[in-house]
Length: 89
Image (cartoon, rainbow, N blue to C red; front, side):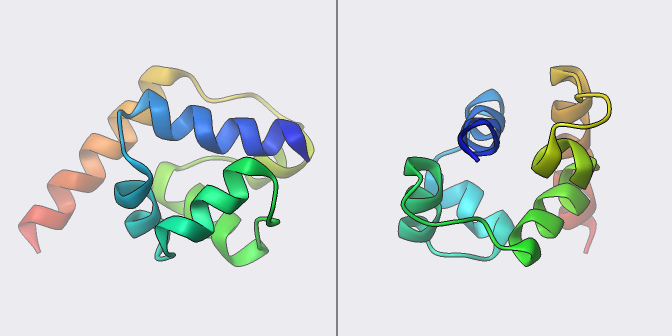
């Protein structure tokens, strides 16, 4: 599970987001995200699915380390397009 926690923190840092900003995307509280990143709390399937849907990631990659890892460019582009979509609404 440690690898998965590092993936979450790494993804957040790639995007230059604070825990508060990232937690808002996942619809959880900042302290919940902090506990996930520290390994004090497990990521739920619901949170993992939100993360994968928002950033167009493979759940198999996130949870099981199977499949191709997304590139930083892929992640950033997906995040930027999500921001543009939210502004339109």
